[in-house]
Image 1 (tube, rainbow, N blue to C red):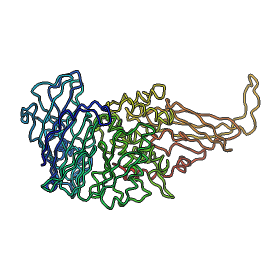
Image 2 (cartoon, rainbow, N blue to C red; image 1 turned 45 degrees about the vertical axis):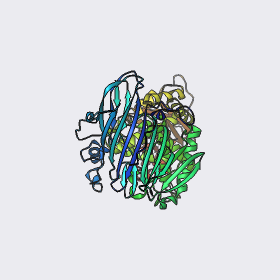
Image 3 (cartoon, rainbow, N blue to C red; image 1 turned 60 degrees about the horizontal axis):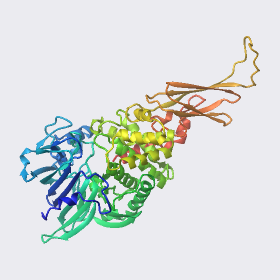
Image 4 (cartoon, rainbow, N blue to C red; image 1 turned 120 degrees about the horizontal axis):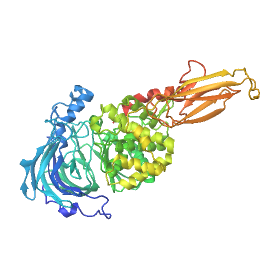
Length: 633
């Protein structure tokens, strides 16, 4: 590998080029790495500077060695993957093992390699080596810092779950020894799971990558230096400030297009066939950058990179890293199916919730995936239409809410959103709840407190907590402040519980009012002719108790609108007059898209017409599951 002088340690903690640091810069890395494209191996060395910003001394350091998740079929990650998808998931992947080895570890010049020991914070699996502990010669005191030098060899797997190689295409993620997060005497450093993503401290990444000379390279951060080497390789130095991860791609077949998008320097890396659809990426990105800038906050980094993996490398698609995302190849996807646009919008949104807010995705995935899914729906609806944002055919149009409802219904409602990601029943439940149920909960909240209030709450949350790694309570507090009243009851039922929302119109009847009989005490005026007594019964079939609206329509077309707090199991509404009730519908404005059965939301007076009103207005519901199959990324 090309070896140069270590980047001065002070550079890792220096102020940002554009002003003061945006983050606390607790963990910063200087890395030199070289890709051997023939063996798909990365050899690297890194210097980590870590500062203990807690009030408790740290006697050790805990590191993620993510690539060891691909080492054998007994790792926690692959056990969970096979359990969720069946053994066939590995049929085409066998012999594609990957791993990372620590070749040397030094602190203050002392060789500590032999002290490194694997640990298992989440399960007792002895075959999982994705987390290691490094005892230190002396504890790092509060406010103190430590410098750790490491040499490592990363053997990339065949492309599976975000990282690896396929042909000459390399996507290199979760590839270096990465420090966990130390909070009040405890390391938060979880094993690599099939469902989980990541959590890390902010810092400066100064990374020099050496590849074969003819390879195009894209990476987190800004390209600062580039040089050709006498051995036919090329070294590029990237610097990223105030980020918490670093990923890169390398492939001789990648082509580059550069464009200014909403004032942002954007680099698109794609194979030639995919580059023909470059406008789909640039246009959808422009919508996302604009929406976030107007509603949430500015994007603070100077550049952004979109990597489009070719179809044979699709396992790398649809993933986020600081200032870099992977998208979906549009090669065989017609313009009326907006999946490439959806993925681009979704992954850019992660720059905010995963990237800048940086909540703990291992433990509270909904804080990133769910909030981001809601924002994605807002952007797609604003850009392409509320009901046709995802699929736009003359006879079939599907928007984000319909797709999310289908995905959530498939998930079965078994788990609350607040579970750690690896504790969900299966992948379907994890996606359907963390992504879709959370987004539907925000849709439902918007129906209750108003759309602008939800947007304001998201903006408050972002402004308060960017670069500060908040928890779920911080989000609900921001929403409560925006609404002006306590919303804990709402989030307890929609996110902290697996209770389902299901309101149904179970009875619509109308009978002539009985003629008066008996003693008239005191005397009553005679009722008008043809007076009817109509009854509408609404039932709460689910366990969640949320306010809901009811629309009642009479034979002459007149309407009345009712409100029910949803606390009891049922509510009866009665009407006397010259007109009979024709039909009734609960939640007529779709203010509760969490409702798991839209077909029982309406009923007509005549027998055998249950659900016809709802079905006639929402016939595209039957296509939701099809769309979910196409968008489960």
